[in-house]
Image 1 (tube, helix red, strand yellow):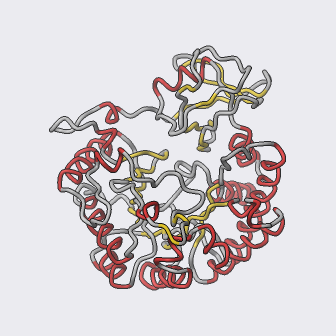
Image 2 (tube, helix red, strand yellow):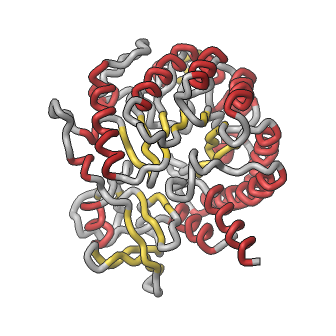
Length: 410
């Protein structure tokens, strides 16, 4: 693995411990969705149990990495905004880094006084993620007293976000005011930031056709304020053919990403019970294939949660899990579907060396095997969908970039 990708893996697994510089950087950086949690006995200059830290850092070679707070990490940050920041490991000579800045629009308001930071737009580097309907209805459904939400997901629970965005459970349409706010916010953000990708996401509806109607509505609203045609991807669940036709025939999106999450029907049934109950594994893959028939190769994706297979209830060794994932990657690639593997960060007391060592071994094996498959099937992640400047927990773009640089050198 090339040095830049290895460093990214090191930081994703080992994290960064708190320092005065890291805390100060949070004041002018895009905020992390997970605050730093101090360990017992750890040096804590804040006097609080948690602290805000930056969300993303960039190294001098352009590698984007999500910041994970970890009190026992050997990595830390020194410096300041005026003198620049340096990432060091146990005091050794370090690397110059920058943190993704806090954009001006996040501190602004719409014409009617609504905070733009709550309008449903977030940034992953040069990608604008539009999520005006974050509440997932699978969280509200149970079968045999088992929740239908995906087992790894804690993000889609209906909460105060859904309230201030006007999302109502069981209702497909969103309020006109919600679209007014996101359109005004997106106009300002496009004027301030060098966004190269737009990604439409949201919580699932139990009726996949109704979910399709909602995403058509969202895509139309976004297109109205995207005059330069920044590539836009639909990150919905799987959709029926008539909804795919509307998205494609109207030119609403340039790519789609229907997140299968995990390979194999048995694991899909366990890990994604709602997706399995209301759509089904076979129909999900069928929808991805139908999308390839419309948008073509290199425009159809599926995000996968890399490492969820290692949860003990699934009974897989890291080698078995990696081999299963690689088999799935080959099956999808053969269909013209490109999986994207986002690293799974375990919760619930499993953030310890043995578990993380197995997870890292799994992820390295999967990443290497999948890179070989992309070469075999002559597939590349389309730059309009994702690139190194927005792939913050994924390695595909970093590994392919390193391979291309090595090829040029020879």
